Image (cartoon, rainbow, N blue to C red):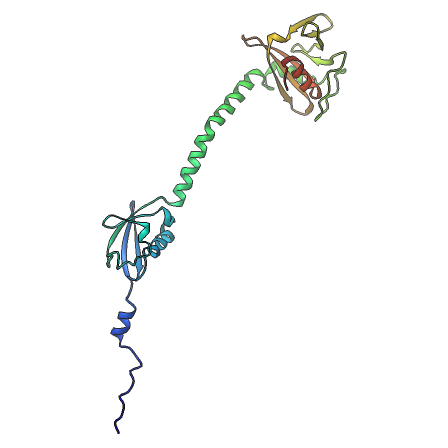
Length: 253
């Protein structure tokens, strides 16, 4: 009988090499940077994109890879061999790194916010021109503290103006005054021990108020008169009457 030839249960090194082609290196340029990608020829364009993502942080969807023209997303399933890529092929990558995207986003957000910040800055500067607690004239009045008969100020309360008005308020000369309304003539009456002055609601263009450090129940109230920038200052105004005071004169709040 004839002896059967032995079974060849192994592959030659050459055959194994052919079944598992070795990876080859591709050079990819992005801006001034060069990246080396090592992939087998059976890898797909999608694999190449993922490799570049890990090296550059550029998301695959944001990558534009140039090799004899732009490689399209429709080609992501094709192998490097099918795309005619060879060892030492040179590609160009166009895309924005995640940090650059974040920087641009931050810059755009700042640009959008800048007008509001400028407006706030201008408002603060304007307020400082109206009332600066460090101004000598204001400090002189505030350092004396509330008058002995000042109406108690209550935080987080909105009370109607008392029938007899608001007493114990001080003017810029530190004189005690009483504020009351003349409903029939739409006037604010400012009474001191020596005189009384009436101001028509129509001549008051705005009413500003400012906190007094260390005295949360009181405000400095400033009447803005007409269009010439004239002002009338009231110190130690009880905060709980502020809303009703503004609503009565300005018609809102």
